Amino acid sequence: MDEIIARVISQQGCCEAAHSVGDEFVVGQTTPSGMCSWAFYVLYPFAQVLQFGGRFPWECDADSARVACPDPDNPVVFELRRLSG
Image (cartoon, rainbow, N blue to C red; front, side):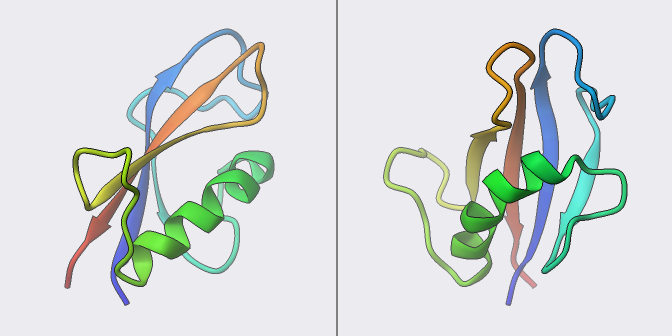
C-alpha cells in the first residue's frame, strides 16, 4: 500500500478546525490528529482509491486527487498525494 498525504491547498472563510494552507496529514485508517473529522469522512474514500493504486479520470495527475470539505460557506480544499514506496 502506498502512503497518502493530505495537504490543504485552499481555505476560505473561517475553518472551525483552524486548517490553513500548507497543513499536511498522513492519511491512514483513522482520522489524523488535528484533522477535522468531517473533512476526513469526505476525503477517506478518495484516499483509499489512491492507496490501492487507483486513479480519478478527471485528475491530470494519476497520483493525486483534490477533495473539498463539506462546509460550503468555509471551504477547505485538500490535495491527496500518493507517495509510492
